[in-house]
Length: 121
Image 1 (cartoon, rainbow, N blue to C red):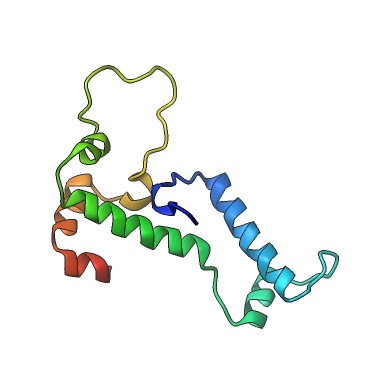
Image 2: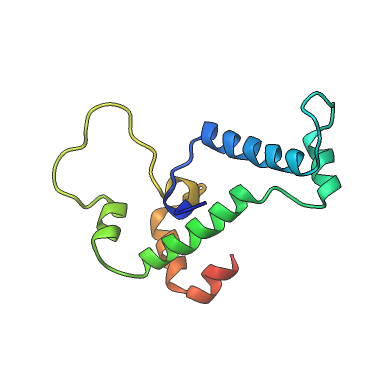
């Protein structure tokens, strides 16, 4: 989870993280891989929910909010205000893609200015 707020997670990465978390729970409960126990049942046994992806989302949201309230090189990088041309090919996954969730960047930046409400959401 080191520097999880800077990760750009594709769908395959998310699935791997969820699978790793379930593998950890199964190891802690000593459930063999040959036993037919669903993931939901394992989570009920340990009385927990999936936490790793939620934790990364929370950390990423806090860090992005911090960046959006300040000026500097990182905000220039996030907003794409760098000189030069973009490389040819498929557009790369960006840090804000996880946070935006069908919102506009301007609305996200306006929400981040109010720190109290930003932390509650």
